[in-house]
Image (cartoon, rainbow, N blue to C red):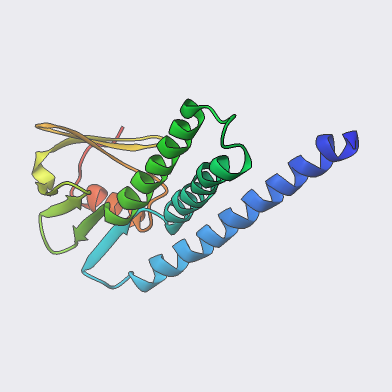
Length: 170
């Protein structure tokens, strides 16, 4: 039993994560190849984010519903509230991942960024600089900043436009 806890479970988890990353990478490559000649490219969050949010919703909704049937008298109200909170968090992840996108136009001097609440057109001349890190891409503007996920599908096209427009990168 100790062998399973110490060796088998970590190996299975790492294999699952590796498989997910290979699937995401293959989809990402197909998307890049498909958009090589397009003048309009959409940068969007990977579909894995929607999958993770959906799994979160299903699991914690099941926990919430099972808490009424398995132990209706002994389940504390705060446990059920926590399950509902995680369900709402999953819904937020799914909605944010589905709505977020950056429209990059090769022929125009602007790009558009959309999220759940608004759509904003940003000219490349309004960008002060771009900070590229392993975990985020931060675009500093005259009026604030915005963050782009470095794992977003087609983010390479956005970075290529930044380089083409000769915007300073950090």
